[in-house]
Amino acid sequence: MLYIENVHKQFDNGLLALEGIDLAIKPGEVVSLVGTSGCGKSTLLRIVAGLEFPTLGAALIDGEVITAPHPKVGLIFQEARLMPWLTVAENIQFGLKDLPRLEQQWRTEQVLQKVHLTNFAEALPRQLSGGMAQRVAIARALVTQPSMLLLDEPFSALDAFTRTQLQDHLLDIWAEDHPTLLLVTHDVEEALVLSDRIIVLRPHPGRIHRELAIELPRPRRRTSLEFQRLKEQLIGDLDLTPGLDLVKR
Amino acid sequence: MSLAIPRRRSAKQRLAIPRPLQGWLLPIALVVAWELLSRLGLVAPNLLPAPTTVLQTILTMARSGELFRHVGITLYRVVLGFGIGTLVATVLGALTGYSRTAHAYLDPLLQALRNIPSIAWVPLFILWLGIYESSKVTLIAVGVFFPVYLNLMSGIQGVDRKLVEVGKIYRLSQLQLVRRVFLPATLPAYLVGLRNGLGLGWMFVVAAELMGASQGLGYLLIDGQTTGRPAVIIASIVLFALLGKLTDSGLSAISQRLLYWQDSYGARG
Image 1 (cartoon, rainbow over the protein chains, first blue to last red):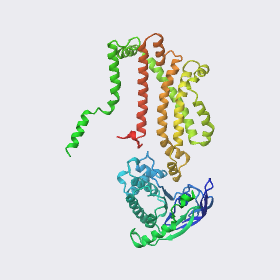
Image 2 (image 1 turned 120 degrees about the vertical axis):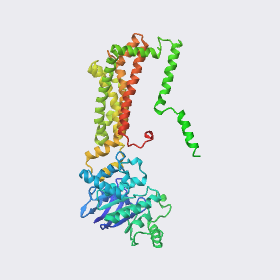
Image 3 (image 1 turned 180 degrees about the vertical axis):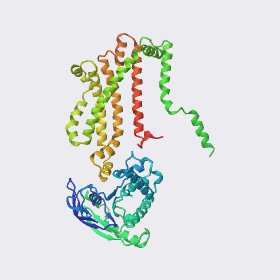
Image 4 (image 1 turned 135 degrees about the vertical axis):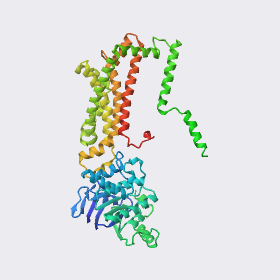
């Protein structure tokens, strides 16, 4: 269980990124944080990841306040962030160094199968396409068998085809062991395809504007009427008034 | 169409000079031209002796064993100076690159010292350390120090914050972070620093030996000048070029082996 309790975050330059965020996420739930840029969604995710700390309030995993990256939490970034000097298999084992050699190898084989990259175990990152690199990053997060996966705009740097493919892939992986997924995205469709619940944030300062439970059965058809209706509603919630940002700056 | 493509390729292949030989073409042409001009008497032999004369001089010195004594002592000075300079630069560069506090205390002084032309230290080194080996090796070490220090420090500071964050996510200790992220990520910049340092090491050994030595390739330069033997001077220059190129190629080969993972333009097939 993840609790976010009254989290405020003020940056050193005085900017208030988050104000009074309260959120509870059940084990196995898929939750998306959506919002325009500057709404603090990534900051909130980084607080849960233990990479940043709230100015006020706290985030708790299973009753423990998060003060550092948690061993049961995996993080997937917008970029693959692979070590260019390590092979695919070595990159996946990056976070496994405390385990016995054999266990490492066995687990690596398992996750390589999961992301369909068994033949690329010995490849170097420079030989991979963007989508493949991101799959390696997913495998690196999965190999530690986390109970919660945090994803920070994980597919936004990929082309549309690869993105849809990886979204489906993520759902397959989720269907196997049901880890909690907390996803940051600015892609409304992505949020609708994946989530049980969507949290809409609004900026200046970042706060929760609205929560939306998505009860469409999976797999979801992006073209269904209900899907389109929800998409329209979400876009309305995001308050994408053109030019507003420009005026403020 | 399908026939035209292989035919064009083979025509190109027949004309092509293999890549490793391309760099030899111009130097060989120049040496041949020089030899011809000398034979035709178009250059004065007391100013610019022919390549064959220079080669003869080198061979004579090799036969008497004199050559190896000079080359040996020069190599010894460079290697020792390079080793000491690199060692100190590595410790200080790692410190100022990694720790902001160390950077704040040490870097301004080192940057100030860097602006002193290293040759300016010579009188002081001779005064402190005498005219024998210590002062020469120290001068070389000072020359090697700065490029290695600067490259290592800026290399560490330039390590991708995003990769460091991955290390933090997996709860690496400071030491593990250094070993598994900083060290490999800094290696390219460090190796560039070593190559620059080695180049400067060769430069400073000449300076050190010109200022007072009884043996070494730099001494041969002076000896050739005072005894009016241009062939000896040129022989010495050629040997410097040869040794410099050889040691640099060695270091370059090591770099390429260590940096096989780099995705750079220069590394393409």
